[in-house]
Image (cartoon, rainbow, N blue to C red; front, side, top):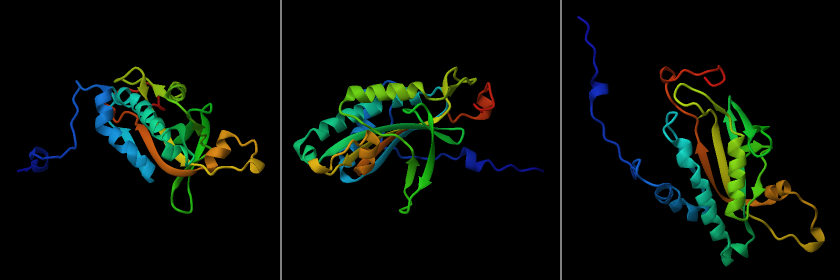
Length: 223
């Protein structure tokens, strides 16, 4: 006689969540419940991450798209306060993707990047270009440009599925005032490297996590 124990599969389990948002909530409500409480901590030397995980077609990209824009709006508003303006705080943006095990800069013609670990065991993206942003409109333009460069592919679940992990970073940096006699023609890249990171928030839109049996991918790279 063969006995199959299915206890682990039929037992009821309880899980605790900070909040559960159904399909009726607006993007604004999603932002207020998830990202807005994090914004003040970015100025307290905090690194935060907001990411979407789920199968293709579940709404990850749709949900994630407006969040960086709203976050940038709140960060810019904070930076305009006298306490931060006097300390030379600036906001920088970068946008890259992980596709097929490789990294690409979505704001620099998909230039290939390298991931390294520094002496403090902090992960660094070598070659990633950062852009200083002053207002929300500039952020919107960068997001649209980067999203247009992102890798997509057709699957049995979605005709235009995001096939990469996309990471958009908003970084607050403190810059020392440069004396007039020492000024030079530094580019954004040089200035970004010279700034000291105060805090960072990363928005990660993961590729679909569906089972292979649920999709019929059209090419090997998509699989």
